Image (cartoon, rainbow, N blue to C red; front, top):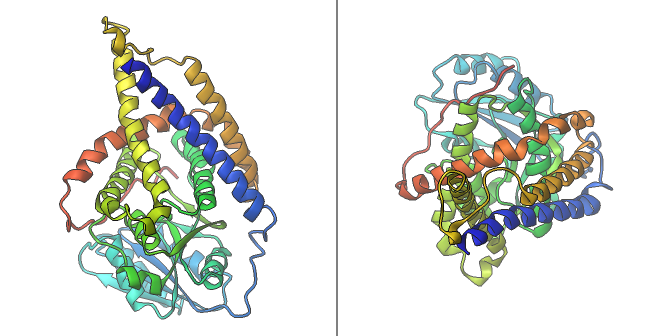
Amino acid sequence: MLGKFFLDFAFYYPLTMAWFWIFGALNYYLRRERTGATRINPPELAHWPKATLVVPCHNEGDNVRETVGYLAEQDYPDFEIIAVNDGSRDNTGAILEELTLVYPQLRVLHFRQNQGKAMGLRMAALASNSEFMVCIDGDALLDRYATRWLIWHLVTGPRVGAVTGNPRIRNRSSLLGRLQVGEFSSIIGLIKRAQRSAGRIFTVSGVIAGFRRSALHQIGYWNTDMVTEDIDVSWRLQMDHWDVRYEPNALCWILMPETLKGLWKQRLRWAQGGAEVSRRYLKNLFIWRKRRMWPVIAEYILSVLWSYVMLIVLVFGTLGLFIPLPSWLLMPGPFPTWYGAMLGATCIVQFSISMIIDRRYEERVGRQFFWIIWYPLAYWLIGMLTTVVAFPRALSKRKGTRAVWESPDRGIR
């Protein structure tokens, strides 16, 4: 029966991936994380090279003063700060110029028009005086020790092209904010650990990542026509056989949407970015030398298929409550059955393990456990719908169309 096939796939795919993430994350934690140095006690190097801290900004007048202040307090011996004012229409440029009088290590690049984050990162890389860069967003607060953690990977691993850090949610005044605390811990953090154990990471975090400038130069820096420049640069680095790592001790505190409209726009952009990258590079991956990227693209394709299959299951399951359907298309209604109970139990296990691991970085993260149990209902639905909407948009987008800034929802503070 076609209905049973769809239902089995809709159930077994997330169940299988959840346990893959759980075991992969436990492997990472036991081998690399549990016995390592603590966040405030990073590994030492005989010599710490100069680092460039990059912060591209667009209409960040409310946040950039605090962001630059945190950058200036990094526990790192030699660094410069490059801020890019990318066509801001507010007072971002004036604040940055004022801050150059306070922080002598700060330089500011001004764009007259909105050029997009990728172009801002490109110009900062070309203006940099160092081989190693740490890039954050204009509303992010970088933990005091994060630069040491990221640069340590780049220095000790000659084939390391990028290192992604550990974003933490600052705004938690609403249900959506609290759900995202759990998401970044139990979903994103767990996935990053599991992917690192498997050898390839789908993407660095655009809000905090360290880069080797020579690796970026070799691949042509960030593409300006991709809606998610972080996914694009991660794939191209790994396709060029650079290693991309995950460092959970490199913390960065960020603002996230706390309205449904803002969350939808953000997740739609993420979904479209993944589709654009897979469309552009899929044909280049089917050679033996790129085989380590095969699990990444396979998992992505399966996730897209799951979104469409899940939509079919929900639509026909609901219709079956009101009108008779052919036997080969019969599906259960949208209410939980034993499938839902199994997935729910797996989610509880996943959330519990992720919070035990995450207590290294945030002791009170367990307080969010009650809110996280609502994650599958809220975020799986949003993730499914954004993928369904974004995939045809990505396929129809013309190559070369510049991706520029859109000021996001910063949440309720």
